[in-house]
Length: 165
Image (tube, rainbow, N blue to C red):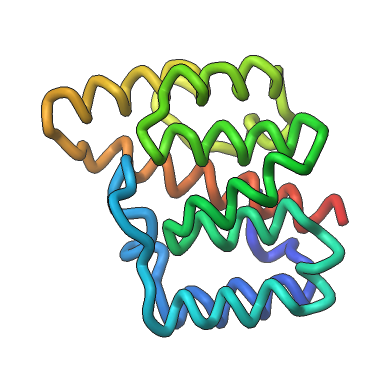
């Protein structure tokens, strides 16, 4: 899903964030050990108060995930009682290394419309990605292709959420 289709106010939020923390720097670990902090964290803390984000809780959950702030993302996503909330919730649990819980939330997601926009070799499968991340963690590896898929997953779901608002 192209980010060019984002509403202007959401595109401005994403542009400002990616200037502080580029997509190539963000979500650089499959399993998070600590939030990014610093200027990017402060920027997200400010951005989640903007009307475009306040009115779209899935975007707030997404922005906190972008800076690896899993607790804040979790508090938001667990209160979104639909497939999109479950999608963000499942991603958050995968990124904290709670793989069985991530599978639970992905079972609740089903076939989300954003999934068709996730560029992934062989096609996107949330459960397969969880298993691949778990295997990578067990081996101590951080394969570039999994990190790229993780970023693509985030971007596709973020764009889908923004356009649905």
